[in-house]
Every structure is written in structure tokens, then in C-alpha cells.
Amino acid sequence: MFRKFILVVVLFITSTMTALAYDSSSDKRAEYIRENYAKYEYEVPMRDGKTLFTVVYTPYDVSKTYPVLMQRTPYSVGPYGVDKYRTRLGPSEAFEKEGFIFVFQDVRGRFRSEGEYDNMRPQNAYQRGKKATDDATDTYDSIEWLLNNLDNNNGKFGMWGVSYPGYYTSVASINAHPALKAISPQAPIADWFFDDFHRNGAFVLPMAFVFFDTFDNFPDEKHGYWPKGQDMATHDGYQFFLDLGPLSNVNKKYFKHKRPFWDALAAHPNYDDYWQSRDVLQHLGKTKPATLVVGGWYDTEDLYGPLETYQTMSQGNKKENVQLVMGPWYHGQWNRGDGSKMGEADNGFNTSKWFQKHILLPFFTEHLKASDSANLAKATIFDTGANRWHRFDTWPPKAVRKQTLYLTAGESISKDKPTTKKSFSEYISDPNKPVPHSKAIGRGWDRPYMTEDQRFAARRPDVLIFETEPLKEDLTLSGNIELKLKFSTSQTAADLIVKLVDVFPAKSENSNKLDKKLGNRHELVRWGSIRGRFRDSMSDPKPFTANEVTPVNFELYDVMHTFKRGHKLQIMVQSSMFPFLDRNPQNYVDNIFKATEADFVKADHRIYHQADQASSIEISVLK
Image 1 (cartoon, one colour):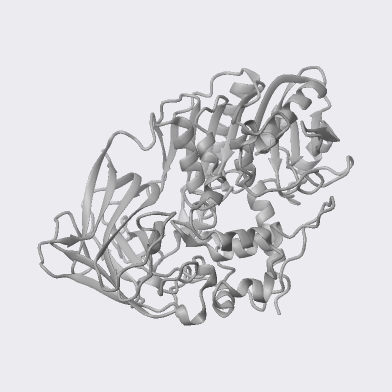
Image 2 (cartoon, helix red, strand yellow):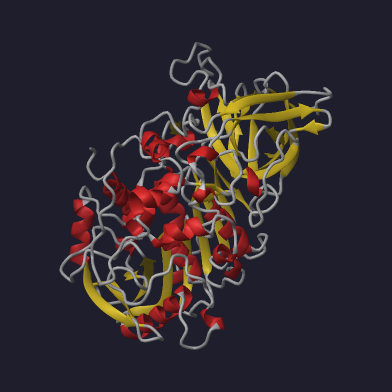
């Protein structure tokens, strides 16, 4: 039996979501922190009398004042004890040498902070009275106390964080404290129904299972450790989750109803009031601090979050205090990886270091230290495929033209609408033999799959392929991609997964010889999915009528990618992507968490490409 598969994943989650994990190779950085910063621990009082455990690292040099750079986290502010130091304080080493007062806080109900923890707590304290609390009021109260009790602070506060700490950073902008001058929500959770755990209603099984097995398994008393997870029979996530069977087996075999948020997921399969109350986006329209939203094009956990947070905060790009950076990164890679590669994709140079030097540090020093203007663009966007940064006044950029491409017979994509009276492509979807999300053997959501060569899937009979002829000139997509599919199934339920793929030519562009490394590579650029029951409403699902042609429309998240001359643009269509997405039974059930083995059936799925039922994609092409 493989030892503590889940515990290994916990360590990954901690380092991934905080971007502050211990790094034993950074001896000189750790030594610099010990020599230049003093550590203090406080229990900061909130308006309801509860205290939040707060750690402060303040420079020994007291000849000047410093701004406060704060992070609030549910992942622990350890190591605990005033003589035990972190080996990282800022997003990069340059922050520590620049000089800030660094503050880390266990959020309410986590680790050594008092109170009750609530995942994505509804932000409604101001509607409930003066003593009512939520994450926004806790942030306000913390800043007020720190402002009045920390020596040598210059009266200016900044906040940053990745993933869940990114969410707490976004929340800080709600009725923000006047001293909060700059925030950087990075890969922030925005709405968990659409972020980590669902993709247009399709359930992200391994992420939810692995995450909540530990994150939602804490004792009530104060503590400074992570709990143990499940013993797993195999590291092969595909096999493990296939053997698990229906989602109803999770509690029967593993959780035993001791993971509260898993039970909440199971009780709320649709986008109901429970989820809507936890949508932080509804509160972000009046943000006042200078804001730098950061995300990664290859972030499989939180890509929805930064894009939607930016759009909501900037209200259609009208607010000049809100800026966006999107780079070629996995979750948090901009702060801890070199950013030169993402899986099999080569980004050309160290994009993370470039971002830290030219964007992130200048942003905070401008607003917290009154240094020279960082002169940042409204949107700084990396063009994958061409490996270059673009500066835009708006995102998506205005200088684009919309173009409709049609899926046609013969596995083709055409600018011309099909004229054939009857034409479709079909495949048999078998939930007991689902399409793997990756050719790699792993837990179920490894980072490299986001740029993985898709030939392993393209050659399966249950995957449809449509592609253009080799392009005669470069084609740069900038913005979202709208899918308008005409679909039918022989059953009453189905998922649709659509992949945008860059197909490389067989020969090298420079030598005109067969390229053994990259020749005919099918590089994944973007993928998206929809659980068909939600095609018309995320709150009011409904079954398909068997064998009836039905419109299924949805969007892929934004892209900025150049398909080079000689490459092909390819669209792949499939109905499973396992185990990243759970299996759709294909027999409609009211709640998929209550599906039984008997509900999982084969189905004949069809994509139509005929004159009166034409499937298409709409792209935004940079002029």
C-alpha cells in the first residue's frame, strides 16, 4: 500500500496555495531574514471578542518607518514560536531586502486563531449589526489594531496572497480600511461553484476529495499541525477513483460524514442559495485600494478566479486602480518557479523573475513607499505560442475581430457555414472506460497536463477531432472562446469537454527536416467543460430528451495564444476527462452524489454540422 498518498498531497497544497512553503535550498535567504528581522507573535482582538493569532516580522533597522505587507491564510502561519523563523517572508527575496513589516495571520477558526471557521464565509456582517463579523471585518479590525500597535509602521498597508489567501486579499477590499493602500489578489478564489470544484457544473473529483480530506479534518482545539489523510491503495488516481465507484461511496468507504464541506458539496449539487451567498464577486464592485490581480494561463485550480475578479473590480475596465497580469504559469508559479517552462511547453525565458522584478515589487513600492511610478499597463498579458508580453489598455483588448469557425464533416474546421442537409459526427461514451485527463499516472490533477501533448486522447474512438488546414499566417487569439454546439445523446445526461489544441507541423520551421521532438505535437492551449444538465441554468438543471438535437452553448476561459504559420488550430470534443472530472452516469439523476452503479450507462453522442444545425466556435483574433 502506498504510504499516505493524501498526506503527500497536503504538503503540495500547503506550498501551492500559500506560496510561502519552506525552502531548504534558500539558506542565504533564510540567514538574511534571521539577521535583519525580529519576530513577534500576538493575539489580535476582533470586535466580537475573539482573537486571531498574528505573526509579525519587523526590521531591526529602526532608523526609518516601513509599510506593512500582510497575508491572511487558512494554511497556518507557522512555524510557531518567536525563535522559529520562516525562510520566506515576501513574494520574492527582493521584498525582504527592500524592507517591509511582514504580517501573517491565521484566519478565524484555523490553527491558533479563535472562532468558528466557515469555508468561503458569506460577507454579510455589515447587514447584521456592529458586533457581527465576517472575513472583511476581521481584516479591518486587524489592520486597525496593527496600525496602532506596531512600532515604525508608516501608516500604509498592503496585502497579497495566492489562492485561498488570494480570496482573503480580495475580501480586504470590501469596506476597506483607509490604511489599506494596495492589494494583490493572486489566483484568488472567487466562487467555489465555478472555481476549484466545478467546471460549468462538472465536478472536479480528485481536487475536492484530496483537499477536503485534510483541510476539513481539523480538531476543535488550537493546534499547529496538519491532520493525517486517508491511506490509499494506489498512487494511480485513475484506478483509485474508478474503483471508488459512484460518489455516494465516498462517505461509505472513506469520510464517514466527518468532512463537513464534502457533505455540503453533496447536499448542494446545483448553484443554489448556499453557493450564491458565498460568491465574493458580488461584493467587489467598489474596491478602493490599488489592485493588481495576478493569474496563470495554465492554472488548473484557479483560472476563473483572477479573470472574474479583475472584470468585476474594474467594472468593464473603467477603474484605473485595478490592473491585471496573466502569465504562462501554473498555480502560484509566478512567485516560486522560474516560469521558463510549463510541462512540455517552453516559455522562452524566466517569466516569473521578470514579473517579480518589473511588476510586483514596483507595484507595492509605488503605493506603499511613494517611490517612482511603476508605469504598469492596465493589463500585462503573456502570449503563449509566441512567448512575449503584451501591454493593453483593456482586457480583453479592443483591437480584435470576431470570427466564426464551423465544425464540418471530414474532421475539418471552416470559415464557411456547412450546406449539407444531414451531417454529424458520433462517438460512444462509456463511463466505465472514461477518457483519461492525462497520459501520466498520478493523483488526478498534475500541473503538466495543462500543456500536455493530446495525441494520447486524439487517437481514441470516443474523442472527436476537427482542425483547420495549416495556417498561412500567424493567428493570435485574445479573449474568450464561445462554443455553440448542436448535440444529441441516446440517453438523458451527458458532459461535453472541448479542447483547443495547437497542432505543430511535422518538420522544423528552421531546417525543414522532420522534427523528432516537436513534430506533430498536439499542445493543449485551453479546455473547458459543461455538465449538460446545466446548459440553460446552473440553478435549474434538466435532462436531455434522448436523440433530440439540442443547443449546448458555453465559453472557454480567456486565452492569449499565437498559432504560428504552418500550425493547425484543432478542436477536440469528448464526454469524459477522468479522474479530473467525475464520471457522468449519462442517465439523468436529480443529484449525482446519489447516483448508483445502475445509473452509469453507455451513450451514443453526436455533434451536428449540417445546414440547419451547425456547430461553431467564435474566436477573438488580435488585429
